[in-house]
Amino acid sequence: MEDHVMIIFVVPFVFSLVFLLWKKLVEKWRGQACYILDYQCYKPSDDRKLDTQFCGNLVMRNETLGLPEYKFLLKAIVSSGIGEETYGPRNILAGHENTPTLKDSLIEVDEFFYDTLDKLFARSNVSPKDIDILVVNISMFATSPSLTARIVNRYKMRQDIQVFNLSGMGCSASLISIDLVRNIFRVRMKRLAIVVTSESIGPNWYSGNAKSMILANCLFRSGGCAILLSNNPRLKHKAMFELKCLVRTHLGSSDEAYECCMQKEDELERPGFHLSKNLPKAATRAFVENLRELGPKILPLPELIRYVLVSNLRRYMTYGSSKQSGGVGTSVNFKTAVDHFCLHTGGKAVIEGVGKSLGLAEEDIEPARMTLHRFGNTSASSLWYVLGYMEAKKRLKKGDRILMISFGAGFKCNSCHWVVLRDLDDPNVWKDCIASYPRSNLSNPFMEKYSWINEADPNTGTDELIKKMKSQFLNEH
Image (cartoon, rainbow, N blue to C red):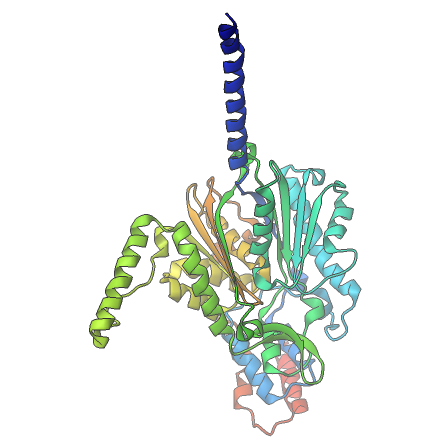
């Protein structure tokens, strides 16, 4: 009788305990998920556009430049792939690039913060008080209280919100922020997080004549993005993307890689951002190392087997005959695991270099090239403008796989693999111009207007060059 009583009470208890443990394990496993519920890119007002004439005037304002620098800048901007509709900060538009103030910097970030976050909260129907985690990454501007505190104060967020303010991470910062959120999601269930990613351009304008530092003035533009994420499985039906894999590579232990892309002062102690000739080499090495780790995580088994067999065959042929060593390719076909490639818009050469390394077709690198032309290099937020282009073109369908690749100072290469959870077709910041893209001709008018610089007498003084530029401007208007 006692045995029967024991069975009646103990067995259900054991089964209940096992069920609860199983349920907890399932919930913990589900908590590993990382979903993007929504994202909002920033589109500055039209009065902040940098057309050819303004850029020419901006160059003329730098009295340290001479004919060699003019020729260098002309070549750089003509080959950059950047169009005439990108945006700049207000202090530069107002002619205060040499004397930026703290107020200028705060105005620049506030305009971006409040525009994107207001739209993100309104569109997602999420209240600021629902946010559990806030990450802000702006590499070259830090203030006290922090920028995260500025957002918390503006939107009156909860007292227990977890905030992280990242700086110095460069153009790869947004994926670093995503990785930070993902790691928190692993130990905190059913959370909502916001990542705010941008760069501070206004206070970091270089006013000297070192070629390695004036190049940054040509490439970087204003922009930013706010991203809403969650690991709550009940919100999966609302989500746009699910993170499947994220790989980070850091070559900071190499002096050559560490020094190729950094904030510094020139010989006359004028601050700016230095891009060295070793940058392509460092980027290539970081890219290769990143792909080496990423490949086994996302590639299907048949492609991995093919790669191993071809690699071994090549080694054998190389050993047997040096003349045949180039006959068999060992490149991995990432298209077996990726439908859309979201590449960092670091410049025309960067996009084409990554595309060539991955064996991509023109249509694969089109989103990055068009984004570079329309919005320029917006640093860490550039990936999200590329993603917006794909969505505006209605190319993102349920089940599609997206690979994001970014590079940043340090030197770093970060990548992540997403799956699209529903068909997407919001025109977002591309709404007013997506119909005119892709464009077959991405040339800008700089060479047409300033080609005479290449033919100018080397003995021509700066004053005379500026006078000719102004004369040309008056004739055109």
